[in-house]
Length: 126
Image (cartoon, rainbow, N blue to C red; front, top):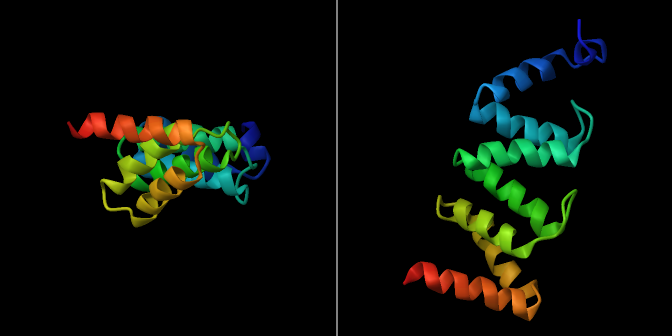
């Protein structure tokens, strides 16, 4: 028996094994569990790790959630540029919240960062 089972987290152990084998749904769900801290110890770095793994596989919910962590600076350094990129990936898949997040960043970010984001977006369009 390992430490997760001893702590009463046997389902978490199974989820971790699935996530480690590349299951995008398990990766996203682990992100949620670690973020919320309800059925797993709250750990924002672990949440970001698993959201990132799912986001890399194109999961729009994970892209949005990780973007939100960077946007708000929850457990990670606030990074408007990276948050915008993640929101953009999710928005391109139809996530309306992500589009709202992109707009919020352009409104709230310091002028130099907003200008850099706009310039990068324009470069991609050309």
